[in-house]
Image 1 (spheres, one colour):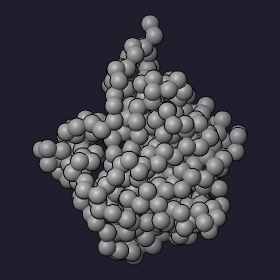
Image 2 (spheres, helix red, strand yellow):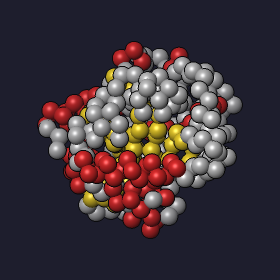
Image 3 (cartoon, rainbow, N blue to C red):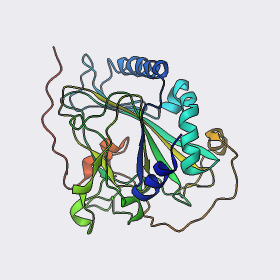
Length: 296
């Protein structure tokens, strides 16, 4: 559970870190499951509905940078979305009724794990109100040099920035030089040991650099919403929408609170994941070094 001071910090800054939320047995089981899933990328030649691959991936030397929607593809992660201590914190931040919105697992291997350019999650999935957040479940220690999540404090109370490329298509990346008043030098790395969880507001500006260290950084990300926040792009499968409740009741009366919105349309020219969509951005903010070739 968060303290009153923790909750006030989240409201003011748009993020909070909760140390050591996972018990050791659960952390070990998640790591084992992720390793087994990654091994399934062996023999694959391109991205698919489960795997997003590093540019240097080879079928005989798999390199996975994202496992897509694990809660939908693997029952273990759907069950884990209801992990008691995490849900209690969610209820403190979002209220008694909470719905799972999405999930992914981002992996940054030592020395080459890909960066994620500056963005706001709100640009991808605006809702009728902005009581949404992302939970980062740290499966490895997050240090200053292995590509930790970076968040700009207070940015969740600012504009929704343009995330479109030069052709006008949504690309999931901001151009910081076109964001007056946004000071990226104030970005804070969310550092914590494995088993901890980070919580950042859906409108918070965030990103992460390439992993230049000799240590991995694996982050399981869940996105949650207050149950009365309805997606502006509609509910395609109402039964699935209802099934994703992790706490409380699901209303059919959306709560509408004005918030700055830009729709993620026209859709990205390169679809599949944020990594693919961001290849259309005009300029990369984070340095990318050449990836070492896989062994063998």
